[in-house]
Structures are given as structure tokens and as C-alpha cells.
Length: 123
Image (cartoon, rainbow, N blue to C red):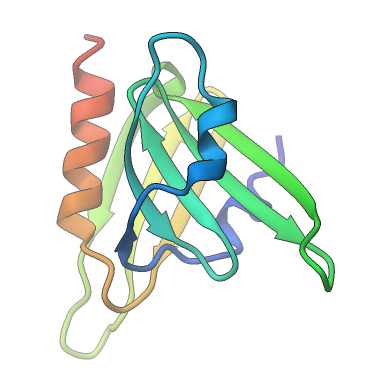
């Protein structure tokens, strides 16, 4: 699996959950939190992480990435420092290693706690 598209747009601040995510959810699944990306959003649900990627000039072509929490084996988080302004989350999954950059203003500890909640509630 190529993970580059997932990491192409850094996650930014938390936003209200987009309404267009609702049709993607399965029975019993609920959206919990959403974060802005460059053009779209990443949504944490009770079952998975959904990343919506609008493509092209108009953004009408949309690709959806879905990462079930059960596929995450390990993760790490790194906050920004004084001279290093970038934060990031890394996920080691059955599909491979995914590194997600966080924009300034994204709360890395909030994301870390969401991943912990999602992954550890299943163990």
C-alpha cells in the first residue's frame, strides 16, 4: 500500500465533524473528532480513521482512505520544539509505516490520546 497520499496533507486544527462523512459510516459507527487538512479533513470515528482527499482543480474527484484501528500495531507522537516547529504522529500498521505531519496549531497530544483511545479500547 502506498501511504504517501495520506501523509501529503498535514493535519491542522480540530474542526466540527463534516456532514458528508455520515454516509460513509457503518451501523453502530460514530464520528468522534475531525481535523482540517490542506483541502479536506481527517475524521476519527469509533472504528477507524477516515481521510478525505479532494483532487483536481475543482475538488470534485474525491478519494477516501480508511484505516481501521485494528490495523494499528504501534504509534508514536512527537511534539514541536523550540527550533523544530513540526509535530508528527507515526503509525505502524499491517499496511506499512505511516508518518503524519501536523501543522502549527494542531494539538499533537489530543491526536495521541484519540489514537490511544481508539486502539486500546479494542485490546
